[in-house]
Image (cartoon, chains in turn green, cyan):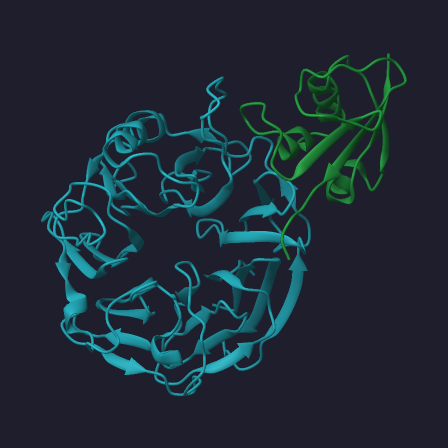
Length: 88
Length: 373
């Protein structure tokens, strides 16, 4: 199975400037692992060493917030990664 | 020395300031990683080629980048500094790669990194992969937390000093912690804070919990250490273990609070500090809005003000702990970056100052580099 992934500009250095990717996995964690295999280093930039989503990163699966790596995906789902910066 | 490059880390990216041995004309290049905070950038003095950078964009996690062509191309560390994975929801995760120190001359490829929250990491492959120093992170840090309580997110681990006579002998310092020494390559540590004031602690004579801002070991006299602390300026001559407060000789109206301390590479008795306002609510600006370096030529027994060329008033900036450095030329050159994005230099050991660059983002660090031809 595969899911569609949309990544923000902050991650373009890992994707050769591509914003739309395809990855495999049935959970958010699995998809991030697969993305990291295809684009080494990407996972650690959005998830810390304990598996926690970094404070200024948000994930949405089919436009619904995904707040844990255990959130599930189905074939054809869309995962959107958002850089959510705060401050002036 | 054919050329000098100043490595400038800022809140919004990295810049390089180039000159030749005449130090007359300067050329600014960059930004590298525009939008990312760059806390430290260091050229390996062993090969004069490998450049490491600790960086973190606003959105993403921290990492280390490496370059062997002065920033023309960058390669991310395969395994950046990170603590061991834990299921404990309170477990610390690396937020900032704050400090980088090349290892001993006999250990090419070895680097050390200090992080926020405090952690000590080692790389044996030129900064590509990093491992925890377990004696520090797993043995010392938990004990520290027991003594002084949870360490909030801000305190950095910094001032990693390797004894040039012995690769296994090292010092590290951490804010809200103090200075610590290891003689077995980081397996075991002992506190080295006797004589340091800690006005903010309930027990002013505590063994740990002090707030060193910058500690430096003299390369030609490795038994001589200097420290700019939250509570004054100090000197330590080993094997003694009691710091002497040499900042008492500073003018009372200026005080002896600051972030950086810089040593003359050829004279263990000559050093510079850059005082800041540390009264009441700690504004951390130049005292009275009148910035100045202070130089001692006698190991801290006396100090002279050096502000020729610097703003005479309403200059409310300061200089952070990594943002003041010296080159190795004769006469010695000094360089500091300000929280307002100015880069100042002196080519006469601080007697006069010139603004070499301005309008940069807030400057976190300035390091001297002499790249290989």
